Length: 93
Image (cartoon, rainbow, N blue to C red; front, side):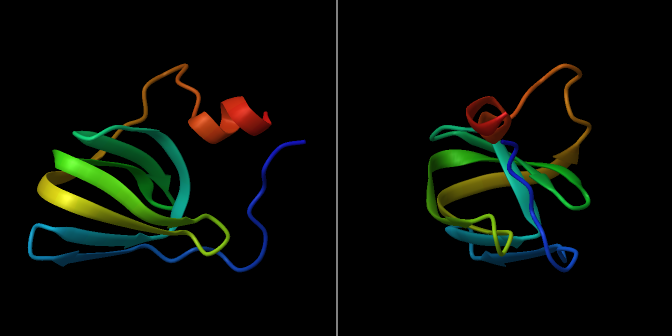
């Protein structure tokens, strides 16, 4: 059974508190993550967060919200890689 998000369309918002805390809404999926990089699909495209000591503090895909703690160096939108499947797609697909 595939994972589907139902309900109202997600709204995308970024809230950065200093360089230590990031809240992202409109998250549809997390493709990959480690201590230096988090790649996620949002309702407006793929978002890449890089830094040091990155940690996902809270992930709510039903509400589309993700909290990141750590030292954030950059936040950028990128085109998704061709043929790349996400973590949730591999688990639930």
